[in-house]
Image (tube, rainbow over all chains, first blue to last red; front, side, top):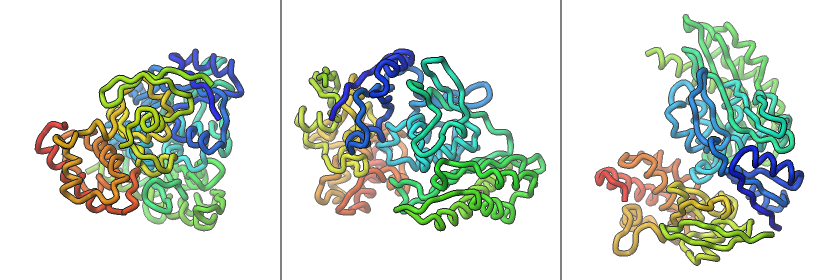
Length: 291
Length: 164
């Protein structure tokens, strides 16, 4: 069991290597998942192409209309970044539940997305921001919406030799807030039983939902946006009644499985409760901004 | 399989080591360099006993390929203080009686050091400390005294102003 490790210095060199060595080659970023899979003899790549040396892929940049996260940005650096302390706090809440500090100092945002685990914690937090992925590949660059990127468990639209280079999302309007909640069997170092992200924007009066975006992880083959719940909230008064109904609708549109972590029925129950709580947290945060 | 040359700083000293591509940093530290302070256990980044500092930040050396960290600086427990001049964390662990069987302690101290170094001079709440060490398990379950020790060290380091 072994492989050759390649360390390209540029994206085009990496893409060229991957094209030449396909299909026996895998890209490696932090490696916090891939190295374990190799050690468990679940994957047998002949070649690993280490993206860790590629310049400009790690870090958070402010753009004209929002933010761009390099795909090699680590979770710990997102947690500590001042850009997400305000109405994007849901991003920090999602980053801080990925493994322990040691994993978060190494694991990358791009790796978590490309792995396409239905339980990936960071994906729902980005889905509610309508995040887009910038992808480099043999045929040039392209942009894919995150919601179209993951196809199913472990499967994405990524073509041969393509690399996700950055994740972009727009700044939120005034009177907006985000929240992320995770339920596991214990508090830390845990794969989500269910995780939920919410992004709520109120109208100028503060008495009506101008926009509500919800995302649910680990309750369907891929992280999902419960569209009926989102549509229901539009122009409705924010509060206990409407948030509970949104939770009920979200649970209805989820498609959880029973596994070692929880039953489908328990997961569906959690979706309803957690959607309501996440919306309540957003509402509370918006009210606090006004003070 | 091609052996390649790994150029790496370990506790400030430059090492040039011939490695096989699948060797982890943990394997290199224990089996090639012979530094046994870094422990080996789950090999899946669940338990934290293999924690070392990579450019000052805590990482699980059991799932890092040695080739991935070429050219970078690694600090192990052997590079943190010595019997004559203990690091404040080491002194606090002894004073608080935070060491039971001791197996997790190198990883625990390095996990805590990385965390405290993120914001030098800042006092830390017990909740923050507990969250910070979540990736490092003590199966003697002596967490209370470990948290006491990290809090004491954080307090002293904040008073001292500088982080040794």
